[in-house]
Image (cartoon, rainbow, N blue to C red; front, top):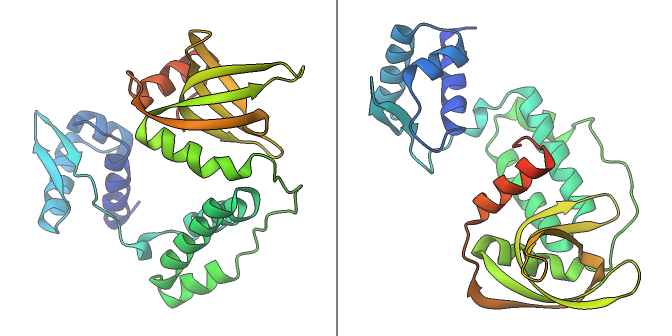
Length: 229
């Protein structure tokens, strides 16, 4: 790995951490000595990278610092194109439009050779069954998740039984044919999963649920034995 590649990799590693991380941990991930790591940090700081911290205390990349899109590798471009195409074809209209707009913004600032690669990517999304039932509710559910707001729902289970629930939504899973909201259910006092197409009615309340979304998500992952993405 060249030094330029190592510096870029160091920035990518820093972006994965929300809290200060020690120089030793960073050095271990990059396979370099701590002394080399300190020199690389100083180089990046000198070039304008918003890295806070110092030796012995740890380092953190300030929120909002972005790598120039021209730094993307060919495989990273392919991943962005494929992911955007999947969302555009398999999600609701609002999220699909956002995916197309995001990809267009990225492609617009790429150098010509990478722009051609993105425009002519051979990775395609196969046609799938169109989902319509419950799709109109997805933008509302996503906003509630971001705002950590409780939702009052009328729900009909697979046996046709109706119930009223107040849920704390913290994740939305997109399967090929169904969308599922992972939530804390006040009625059951436990985490439950609700298919969006079985939600008969919903109302986002003004009440913020008492736990943070990331804490609920962590509990759910731990209970399901899932690793963080």
